[in-house]
Image 1 (cartoon, rainbow, N blue to C red):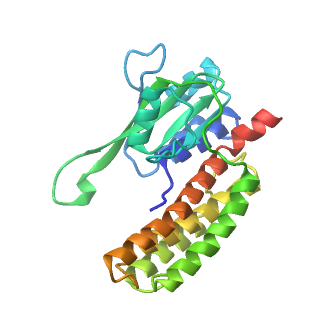
Image 2 (cartoon, rainbow, N blue to C red):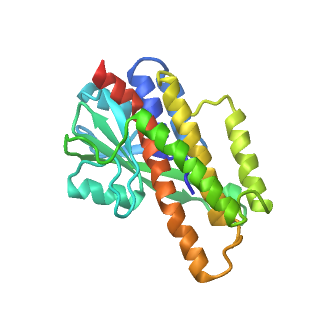
Length: 263
């Protein structure tokens, strides 16, 4: 399922903070979200983990002008530029943040803490590992215009495919997924922090919609794919659609830095 990555929240609201459009408290609250706490380890000049407010301030003091997102997958190093150690960690986490202006990147490690039969007793803590990165163009990141065109085609393909396979809109899982998407879309539509161009917001919302369709296909039982070969064919057909949606996510989150470099 295509989700809203923690790296996206960190980059989006970190960029707004660097630009002076939000306060440190606003940025940290948005980044942490429903998690219990986020900390950063490995920052130059720090002997141990520090809080997000200090970490973002330190990165800005070190020369960070903006934050990019990477969403790599096996065989697809989307948004990465090396070196191997950073790429390996990012691939394991399936996401990372890369600083523009200073050769550092952040990779999240997620922990569940607490105990008890009630899920409410368990809380999530995130430790961001700060590592050196190579200052080079990120891999396979499209422009916003390219991403929007690719997404429009991917949405048509995904809708046609899922309709053919009888999984486009049937069953309780599909209905729940649609309801969740609509609820998220109605929560102020703050999919990106202040300072992003409207086109980036539009591209990210469309990527989330494509991700919803992928989720429906993956979670809504077998649908019309009643044999192993048909299920495999469905997964194979959805793979390029999912890749297109991830590329668009990265393009949207990175739009702030792209505009910064152009202007």
